[in-house]
Length: 383
Image (cartoon, one colour):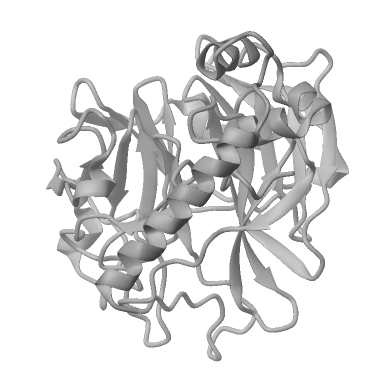
């Protein structure tokens, strides 16, 4: 299709959409839609979803305050292909994310013939309401990503971030206050310099209106003060953003480990408090960067860290949480990938805490979960 034909097609679509919009009844009779939207935004989306089609369309429009949804990376039991999906808690349905860019092609390896019994890590974080894919491994054991890949739910698009100073895999990955951090890990081969290096990408530093992905202004990675040694290159590690700090341990699992805490305001590294590291017995995540939760992978206890006592306080215990693989937190919820690749949700605000299972798409196993704003939809796609 030529540029002229494309322009004509776009104008025709715009005129058609205008005619469709003109035929729609007002959101609230007697009020301009802009004022009606302000009034309706105070009502829970689940109520609007069940009342009328126009209100259902409204809650998925880019201009309406988005509710939170669940995002997951799945592997297929049949073909081992990776899939990104979003779960809408209002309609209780899964939707595939639009495909990532194909140029350059992205190859994320989950299994290698030499290590059939082990999953190779694919590391992602959520930051500023977006999903950021940071690190993975290719078939020849090289870093799969030279630039992060970012998905924006409101605009339903993927874009590449700035080139990493040092592409890496099996690294530390985390986010805090709209900033993405990577540390340690391995490049195409082991290097002491890489194992000690730390870099960050501030998504808001260069463009405070958050439209950098429209005009190509994606900022850049900055080198930070390095780690004192390379002990964090042994595993793929989550750096947990919590109360202005990044907390991380050097290995996963139940065994002995070492931990450090990075204070963002002071730009300083210190050893992790004794009680924090002693109780770090499984995957950890922070809810809204304020409350830190851990699942004990042996007995399935969900615990919350008490800074004053330097101890982990049990919230709930369940066999469904034994051998938990990964957790995330947001909006008063903790979401857990269980040992079978299913997803368990715990409402940690409720008293007592409530727990339920989210049914995953048939034939899929969850690898990671994130809590982000729901995806916007084309105006005519939600009826």
